Length: 156
Image (tube, rainbow, N blue to C red; front, top):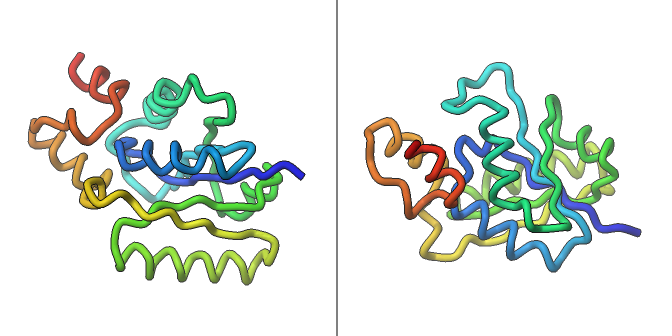
């Protein structure tokens, strides 16, 4: 059986923390689908196509990575993709508590779906898309916090 994991998120924008989690998870799975969740109630800084392009540029050389987007519940998307695992990164105790709750609810809805939590490296633990967006809005330097594809796009 193929081990497929979905790494869901808004990736608005993708950060070096996201990249690190995916790269560390590659040996664990046959395929990782990085899936941009679309929530019509949420206001994004960057449009879906831009975020998908950044992901493709950041992971284009990885044969086991697929980039996609979806609407609705992540567990329904996982079923459509035959994924048995959800991959999530953890930066803090607050992240853990939140992800634990979501993992329990997902497992209650589909007992065949497992959530795999990977701890961020200490030096990446303070990086979040929310903080990076604020730095971008304030015209700050985000070069240390985003992959090269994102930084190139932002400096055009």
